[in-house]
Length: 554
Image 1: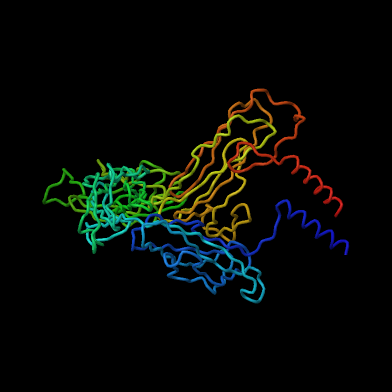
Image 2: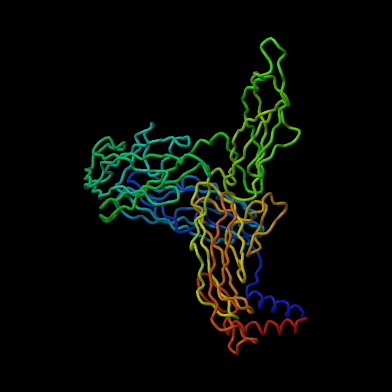
């Protein structure tokens, strides 16, 4: 019995300093609170919420319901109520927001679930809530060209070749009763990494006053009009084929309480993949057939009546070492007959090890000359994924030996597709102390990091979905010895599309390091976002009994 008491007491103590047991755990994405943003009166926006069990054991979803905000908010699809979710399993609900007045709306979705893992479902119910908000706006946007006509705040250009141009024509009209007043400028292209690909080429909306008209859902009455051009950057490198742009509408009274609406139009431009370009993820290989079409050279020593000469052909590559010609799979001839055409395809392999765009040259050699075909390889994702990281520099300022410091990196996927990545700390004293991001396929969370589970198919342990936000905790402990005065390190985020480097900077205190620790209590801990955090005297005193109890309970 004494042993049992000791184990229980030790378990409670360990739990109090951060050690706990795993259990079913509900995760909702997108995170609460969720804002639908400005939405035209009497139109709807729908978003899908994913409910995931990120803990061990079975989590039962009893039911989901609108607990506040009906009928502006309603569940239009429920694939979760009554379901049982194992670790990593998800289900989805779709929520629709429909404003009918030019006001701010708030609502909530309630999720009732059972995580006690007994044999009776939903006998012990817990509740999670998704807070919702949205604003009814008088701004109505309709795309009138190219056909078909379409309303909303999100539009996609038709697939466009590099170097070519696609244009969309939009109209703005008034969906409410009082006159809608636009500012000057009425439209503004927001500055993003892709903003140079889009442009507002004409508009008569500056300072427009638009009166309300009934039966005007297509903006055929009392409207202003503007054109947006999408011109994917021509030439190489072709680093991606999906571009994102945003146009802000500067109105004076289109939102609730006669205030600006804050409406933004989202634009997506797709690019037709160019020919002669091979896309491959870093560390992977991609093969592509390169079409060869040439005429075998003339032999000047022969004439029309003589037997025609044949030439030996060789195939080789120059340029980047990431290109190769696989042996034994080539179908192009090793000889050709003078003045005769040659049509064949040769397989080129691209195996990049670093990000970027690389040039290779396929050389067809024959006696006395050669033909050259240029090929390009893009190391990264052809979908053009990007991570938005804040801050872009971690500067700890002046730091002191025998102290520890912490900061947080906030990461957001600003694209329309999921993106895998792997973080790495590089430099003296810098480490990653925790990551809240979701695990990639083949990995599982141990409560602090994602570690291999089974046989992973990728070296990148983390995966972030479109619009998702997560964080990385960075710890820094200055070197205790040495004459270093400036610390230069980095946090690297390796993705299929790019390797992002976040510089880490710190300046050591001026005195040389002492031979023994100072008499004051050092700082042991780290925390997100603070320049200096510590375990404190209370934490140290809690740590000493734990050591004593460990010895006592052996």
